[in-house]
Length: 425
Image (cartoon, rainbow, N blue to C red; front, side, top):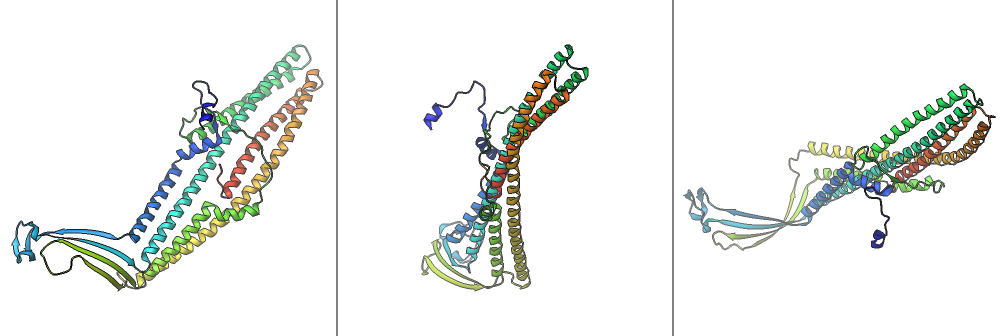
């Protein structure tokens, strides 16, 4: 790493290094308020789980100090005390209590908080993947708009050059005034396309910069390295099983269903008696001497009915929990259906993008060859300006379509990975 740092290329003074897609995604994730919000929610759920686990596993320790500040006290024969805070009248105690069993109430609380933590972790993962895909799409969209602006700029220069050539041929009597006006019209149309391309580039640049908290129109250099790569389509039937097993939305729905089941078990506990086993240690540190043992040890077993037991409220609480479980089960089924829909839709879009890219490459090659032929014929006077303009427009459209098809191939490949539950970076 040190050698790589020392051998890194030196950029000109004041120039920013170009953005790579991986670096931009990392910066966008660090700047995303949605990701930060999901992180905080996951951290809160983690602390909640730790709190429940500590409450279930650790003993409780209590201290008390009491003295007769005002009134009658048994420590001095029930005489009236107006202000008496003497040591022999004070009583202090320390109590250590550990619950050994409480009809699995602690177990269900810990389990529910753990499932809440797991659900929050999948929400964080989903938010991270979605924001990463959004950043990747913004990166390649800006790269596409820059490429199209460059193509449009080249076309504008070619149209201007064509106009100058037509003007020279017109002065020498080889072209008509109509040809000259047509050439100028095509030139002005290219200027309009250039103005539109510049506006689209600025819009893409604004979206790009906002994702990483930069000035909206601050210039950016990209190192995209767009290559078509493999055009072999993935096997959607094999990826569907993986998507159903690992996609964060699916995992979150499963954890939410387990949480609903845990809540239903807790509601059922509210109907049943509670059996509790507690260990208690108490020590008196101050107070009058007596013959009682100090400290005292106790193991207590109690059987009690739920607080405010009236059958009706407990029954309705159980039914509400049962309805929540059914809702969570429906949410899991909906997530599975959406996963299938997203994966197959992404596969269809990816297949279309691969085919479009292959055709656009052939179309660009053909239109470029045709433009060269027509351009030579135009210079020789055997082709009119309409034919030349059409050949130029065909070549321009072919270049634009190729750039768009390559961009769509990258975006849809990332979308397919996102639909399969894989990180898009």
